[in-house]
Length: 144
Figure 1 (spheres, rainbow, N blue to C red):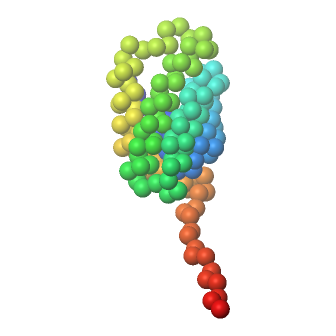
Figure 2: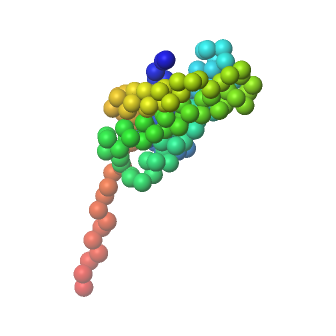
Figure 3: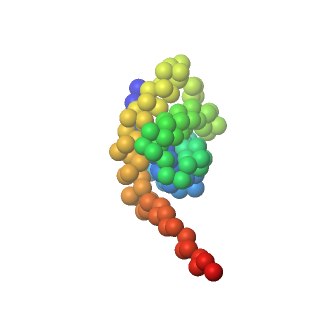
């Protein structure tokens, strides 16, 4: 069993930047992972894109998520992405894509992504050039 560090980074990018940026980061990271491992292009890019998108959709509920919310969003995105890996491999024709230990692998990957999220969410903000929101009070109207 391996820890999916790249999947955790894709989910952290979604938690930090929203669904569109998470999908973009997940796709790019997935294609790079596919080329490095010699897998068919897209077999890992699709689950990582879904992981970034799910984490980004969950992050919509708050403008600036606290560290623990970003951790939960990263964990959920990584779990969904890990579940999608065998589904994607099934569609590309891999023999026996479902591992019998999938029910053990998904929680381990989700917990590892949660542990790594305090490092990966700021890293994703830096990589995607996401600035903190600046809240400015509206100008006061003169009273008559």
